[in-house]
Length: 394
Image (tube, rainbow, N blue to C red):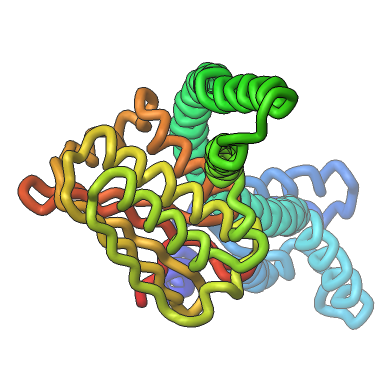
């Protein structure tokens, strides 16, 4: 609307320089019709373009200027002259509009290129946005992986430290086991030499004496034979005692409870410590390996009571849980720092470490409770079946 008002104002002004020049150039071309007179048309077109004129403005200016051109061509008053005027005026207008058309064509091409560039830029922007989003996701994933790696590294370091401690304990345990085995062999050898060998030597001497006396007189032979038989019976008992210590036959033949009952009776007889056994049904469902593990734990626990606890009573309870068998051995003797020993791994306590190792070999668990004034309780638990693990509540 503003451009139209501006154009009308220009065209109605009598002293408009462009309109005056256009009239003059158009009149000359219409009058002469030579190509030389067409050159001002393009210059006028460029001036109009530089002044912000549109094609419509030029057409209006051309229509205004055509009236002046009629006077410049005398023959324009005839039909032939009018056709000539119209043809030359049209050609002049085309040459004037050509710079605008060229500029418009270039502008259209530039607009097309701009649209293509805008489209390409939009596509690049979308791709960049997608890449940026992927980069963010990758950064988040990288941070998660880094965090996971740090967690794994900490766990690995903890496991490595634990493995080193266990390896150290294992080496210590191996040395202690070898030492204990050697000490046990020395003790058994000494017992065999000091007791059984002496009894057998005594029996041999008595038999030799009986042989000599029988050659002289049979008086008193019956009594000496009875004495010799007693020595033989004592030797047999000692051999049986060694066999029970090394491996009680009743454990294999009758089961865990009869073996425990027999062992506890002998323990009470030898130490003077009162022992009470409480057991529930279903214990013998355990495998032979697990029964042996519980029996050895009981042996070691009672040996510790004899050596360290200074107790007067021991209560042994064997109960069946839904998926496990638990044995508890409680004494009323001295207590000790069970928590500190557990933290240090019981490395210097071969008996406790041996009990724990025996139970862990069959998938069981081992725990100690020791309270000042209330004695010590050892808990040993083994699963009824191979899938059982860990302590369970009754």
